Image (tube, rainbow, N blue to C red; front, side, top):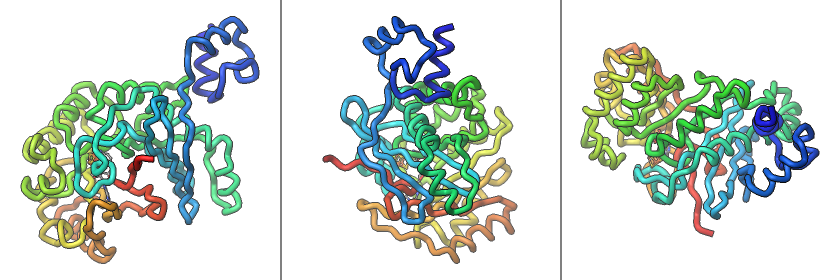
Length: 336
Ligand code: SAH
Ligand code: SF4
């Protein structure tokens, strides 16, 4: 009974302490013991930054050992999404990604992954944000419903902790995030993709492709040398066959690198026959890479080829939070 109450305080009331005010129905003896022996694992925000359009808020969260991670709250009309991190830094080294450029420090624990969602859920509830939104006369959902594992780190490199965290996020008596509202993005960790299929994990899967030939991909995504494109595509095929699910394929559009009509046809050929949707992400600027984003005309041309010649659906990701470096691949923590 006490455990059930504690759970409710943690995941429904989003309690911030073991105090009598925060947990009135727990006996003092238990609260005192919890305060002495346990930790709520809250992640204090060292910095909060709002994008100028007011749609994106970035949190720099401090972990117990002093390391820092970034978590992003994104608002689209009627929808709030938390973009959460799975590692401090990243070991995969994608050339255009600020997290890759900072290198790998450590995995996050399940608690640290869940705590990011709780931080965002609490912020929503505190609803300074909702107040801002209501002045914009937009519907402001108070509850966090969507999670993307697209923050710092490679989630399938930290498989067990990420799955443990997702189980907690999904728990229907707690935060109750529906599996169909969780998207995990991977750089293409082949054993992880196969394991997801084998375990029939029900969230959405996004695979970062960026190139349709092994040589071009390896130049952008160094781990392609470890898990070559043909092995990756075989794993994706097997995933879709086993789970019956479509995969989202991400393609960071870099001007003059991977955005020509020939590139569009190459990805169309590569994905032929697979249940797929392509997410095009115009390159966001990072200090360590001097490529430029594809112009919207060229992005539209790319989409049109996928649609007309391959019946392949695609979206161009809305650019959000670029002015506060909260866009895809811009998350990094500088030493301070
Ligand atoms: N590690 C995972 C998830 C995090 S990144 C992965 O790589 O899939 C989420 C998406 O942003 C990935 O598709 C990634 O390739 C892309 N990305 C990284 N840096 C970017 C940048 N500078 N501009 C646009 N997209 C970027
Ligand atoms: Fe890591 Fe993803 Fe960035 Fe690549 S794009 S370095 S896998 S976070």
